Image (cartoon, rainbow, N blue to C red; front, side):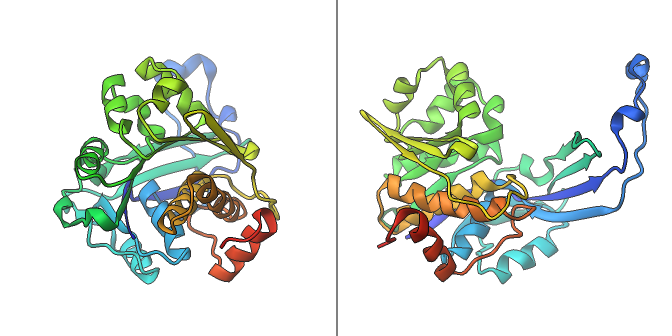
Amino acid sequence: MQIYISGSLAFDRIMTFPDKFSNHILPDKIHILNVCFLVDGLDERFGGTGGNIAYNLALLGEKPILLSQVGKDFASYDEWLQKHGISVEGIRTVEQEFTAGAYITTDKSDNQITGFNPGAMKYPSQYDMSLLDPSDALGIVSPGNLSDMMDHPKYYRENSIPYVFDPGQQIPAFSGEELADAFSGAEIFITNDYELEMTMKATGMSKEDILDRVTYLITTLGEHGSVVNCKGEETRIPTVPLSKVADPTGAGDAYRSGLLKGLAMGKTVAEAAKLGAVCAAYAIERKGTQEHSFTLEEFTKRFEASFGSME
C-alpha cells in the first residue's frame, strides 16, 4: 500500500542561551522591549510533521510520498530524505521562499523563545492527486499548509481513499466549520487530549458527535499511553518501557508512523496503535525528531516484549 503524507517540512534551528532570560528583561520596560541574547552556537535539525512521519515510516520499511513544499535552502534536507529512501516527487519548491523554519532559543531554566517562519509552507503543494491509485492508497493529513489540509481530505473522501486526519497545532487556524469538514469522513481522527478539547470547543461538538463523523478517534495521552475509540468501544494502549527520556518532541509524529505502518500491514486500528507506541518510544529516547534509528528486527523484538507476537 502506498502511503501519502500531507504535512510540513521544516528546519529546527536550536540555540542555547547560557543564562536566564529573566536576568535580561526588565519588567517595567516590557513596553519598549529591546534585548539581544548571545547564544552558544546553533544546532540545525530536520523536522516538520511531514518529514518526521516520513522518516519513521522509512525506518519501518515503507517508501512514503511526501506532499509538501520547501524553499531555496532545501538541499541538505533533500539529501537526507533521499538517503533514507523517501520520495521527493511530491515536494514543491518555491524558489523565492525559504523552507519553513523554527528558531528556538532555550535558557538555563528551560524557558523558550521561538520564532517560526512559515516560508514556503504558505503555498499549497499542488501535487496531482489524480496520480493516486484509490485501491492501493492510504493518506495522512498532518499540520502544514492550510489549503492542503482542507483540499486533500476532500479528495480522499470523493475517491474512497482511507485517511488519517491529524490537525495538531493548526487547529486554531481553522474555523469550527472548516475543521469539522476536514475530519468528517476520516478513517481516523487523531489528536492529543488538549487538541481534542480545542477541537470540541472550536466545533461545538462532543466526543460522541465527532465519533458520528469518523470511524475511529485516537487520543494520545503522553506518558499515559493512548485511547482508541469507535462507536461503543474503547481500547487503551499502554506506553512502551523506556531506557531513558531524552526529548518527547516528535513522539506524536513517530506514533502516527507506527499507526500507518500497522494499517498498511492490514492490522486493526488498535493493533496498529501498538506499533505507534513502540515507534514513539524510540523517538523519546533521543533528542531531536529524526535522530533515532532502529532496524526492523530491533523494532519487532521491542514490540513483542511489550505486546506479544507482531504476526
